[in-house]
Image 1 (cartoon, helix red, strand yellow):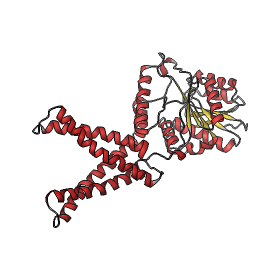
Image 2 (cartoon, one colour):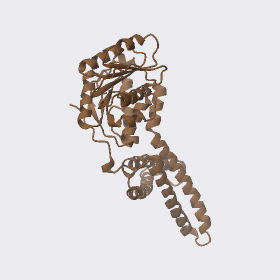
Image 3 (spheres, helix red, strand yellow):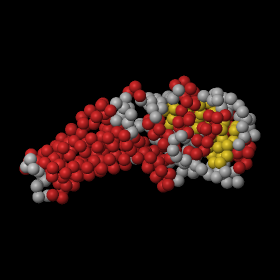
Image 4 (cartoon, one colour):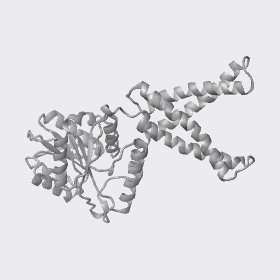
Length: 378
């Protein structure tokens, strides 16, 4: 590690693994654009490209940090964040820049300026509709953005952007976010919402060199790590629903046995079903609030909203199912088809309920929200 001991306004953080000449062009471009402090992280590169790091470390504005073994892009970024917090007390924030030439220095400086102006995290977002974008990258971003919007309630137009400007005040919190490799960048986006950190977007150039062949992104392994994080809430929501359904069934049987001596027939069934549903719904509410969505909003408000959603959903399940039966002229004896339709309606309502609970029932109160409307530079 080489420490130049310089003070700066905004530092550029450049993680790199097995670079080529594009790393030199990236760092020189940042210096020419006006960055006075560049923290370059060698994330366990092979011996052959070490000359690029050694040459760049001779520049007085560059500090070189080294991982002896490859630990991942996320680990490299966090190493730089922690180092800056310790050694650059006057640093106002950082801009993370990929070292493969995918980010233009002017865009990095523009994101830094927006960050200083608004004291928010700024995401440099590319335009994936442009013809030079590789089809795999275009489709991958569309799918990920849709999943982010549906399951996380975040409208982010470029979920894999490596160009991010971060104010100093949020560096410690983001350095503590889990993840060592590419999944760290996804975890960071999720943390922005969970920790009420304000963020916005800025349009940047869309640069793909040689169809992004220089990327170290492993399609299967890293995609699994990313989607596992994005869908974590939904997985927990599914388990919460299954646990509540099991409790509902067990409580129905228990209440039926307890009330058998005083009630009979329809009254017994109705009383047992109502009691079981009330108790199981309280269990479901508690699991969703504290385990699934980890909400810190007003308990009373969340409870009222939960039942304001639950009651109409029960009615919708019945009306939609019966409506499809009648429209399709399905007879009472076609039990298999009726069961399939019932399951499809329930699945649609299940996903819809998740989205409403995530964005409304257990959403943070307006005064607590840290996210802001996304804005794009024109």
